Image 1 (cartoon, rainbow, N blue to C red):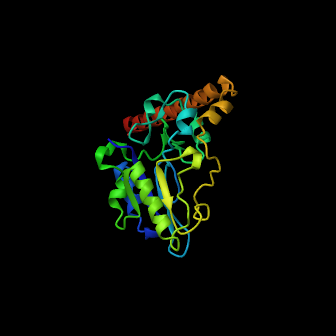
Image 2: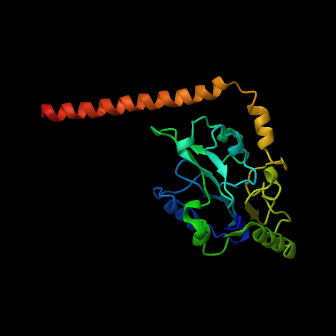
Image 3: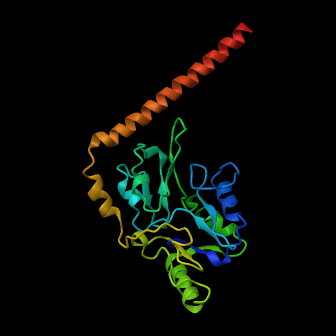
Length: 249
């Protein structure tokens, strides 16, 4: 399989929300109005006024700092492009959330068995690719091989300077990503994160994290376990109380 990527052309987006609806269905999430990235929302549309709509989603960095920060490799970059997450490995330390320069990963704070949540570029769909691209009626979101999409983005921008701001977002941000944006304005004006680093961040991430005592990491795991035990006791007590009520009745 080729190295998959996503191109978002803001000039073609009509704000219909087909991408967010398709994302929710693909990830078996309840239908809802997406207003920001959270445990049930992997992509959403920002209304920037004057019929300009901009998506937010995981950028699937070429060298993801979230994966670098994870001490147990619960997050990793696949050969096909997506940065994926394995809940069975996760310690709940949430270093990935701190490390991501785009502010993407979220956490299931109210779950008894919380997970980190983010777009995984529909890796479970295999060759079908991202559901958001399949659902887009205008071609505002397309998917394909990385180098081909990057060439397409550069061609559109260069050949139509009146329509496009002369920059492809995602080429240099954090050392490069597998999601690209082109549009009518500076990406920062469009509401995309202002990631100033043009070098991959994993090395910088570990330079900082290696000075963090282990007690901080495992303290987070302990607190997560404590939360789970407390929640479990409450659930058991609730069930026992319900059973007693039925017996008395």
